[in-house]
Image (cartoon, rainbow, N blue to C red; front, side, top):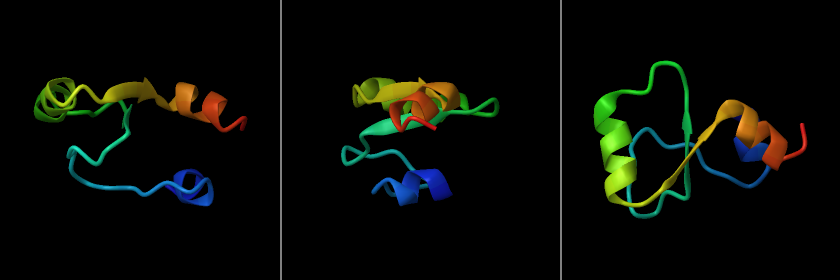
Length: 55
């Protein structure tokens, strides 16, 4: 969460059309996955996110 906010992002508990990325953790529920797919939102891993921000 801190890394996201430190890089200008916002952490949300729900997925909407305003969401740019979903960081998929081990416990991502099927409804959130389905919602992200319906809205064509990129789903990335924690590792992908860390590489994006060069951590």
